Image (cartoon, rainbow, N blue to C red):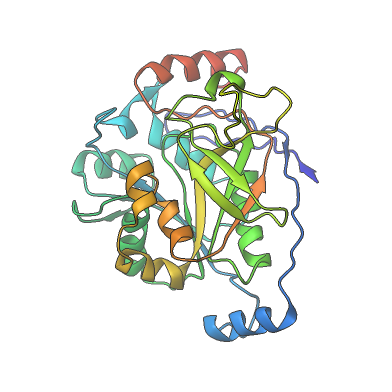
Length: 298
């Protein structure tokens, strides 16, 4: 199944955005009827399953690799504004907020029209920040989408895809997306890799190359997967997440999603066709601006 978006949005500083053809490979949903009924009973849903969806963009100023990253200019606009504008195009989101502990980020976001929730500086990661923001919202939501603020060209169809995946998999509490890994990124620890089972559930995530063959080299014939930072959670699970103790694999890899897997929860994964251009370090800004110029995006 493929979807094409040609929508654009603008604010006072004007932004042209062009969707990219997204093709996600649907993995089979194999939850048995009893499990589905049980999950629905547990979650207390009497109408459409997991129907109310909020998108949260967690943002912090302090960063060991790139301080002030959310406010860095991408062709004349703060990166977090570009991310927010892309998220606004997703049809599955009922509401979008920015969650931050920094007054400068909050002021910037309110300036271009975003709703802002102030969160504690003690949040250890984006997931915990999303949870705190969720508790402060007036309305109740069934799904929370954690939208990474360093993917300013994220296609809205990917947001819609992971939401649908979680709605269609009652035995999962978490969903995310992967795309094809480029050979040159195979050994880059900033590019997180993923392996999934034959039903589309995550097996493992790593900063190292996985699977890793005995030759120690990239196999050009193998379809390695690159994890995209965006992820969605069942809101009831999100409330539980901060109470779970850090796990050995999570700490070793410094990947918060591993705590979900190590505690035995299921995570649904969709495959998308996406040129991953996240901003992890200052040098990535020039790369993404060059790409935007090539595609006539402003």
